[in-house]
Image (cartoon, rainbow, N blue to C red):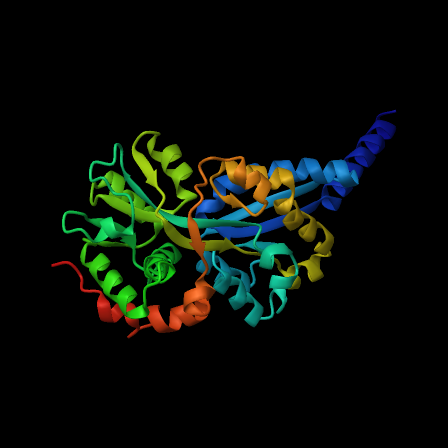
Length: 331
């Protein structure tokens, strides 16, 4: 009897182990400030996938700076999917043969299910009455921004500042003049997006912080509501959040179908609603219009005025580029 019971329990344990091992696990390697967004996306996707297929699935997530994450995947981190905040990081992986060369054609909207833009965070009540880009070059205003040579947030802020001049009919010479004046009002360059927030809110430096629109929710969650007001300028840069299947990993693990289903879910009405609740702009226009925090501002792309992010990097941010020529550290 005892022997039979042991055999039965052993069989049950073996079956359970086999079932557990059969459950597919995906790894989503993503950028740092998307952590909270994917914490909400993952259980919603798991439930949706179970309902559609009858199969269980697990999703793990890894977050750090976008470029650091891309390098980790290139070096062997077995991501099934990458969800980034700059196209250059996925282009880097495509150049390494890790994702498809034509990754932009694999999903709608050039493989960007969501976008963001750059706006201003000011102190509660907007004591300096900051309304648009021209206010940032007033002599009484100090601006907090990320160093564009060390952080994607900073590169997008710089390109937004330059591009808004062009969007209003200005020339590159006028854009250079504006950006030069802007950085004269920057008392210190932050290392990254979270560092910039700390400089602004914890150290009390500056009157305005230029950052991603999606950061408003993160600031409220981390520092409490009512610390800042969000100011949408008249024109700003649209920043894409591109995604891709990591072909190297899914070929090895046999997870191509599940990885595609996960990224498809980001485009679904449920996935788009979750994005909107995290202040990330959904690509679904009907859902976008439901959320009043997404102000109808004039948006322009990197390609419109800079050719591409890669070209902007070469001209503006590489050593000896335009930023090095115009920026003079505060004394």
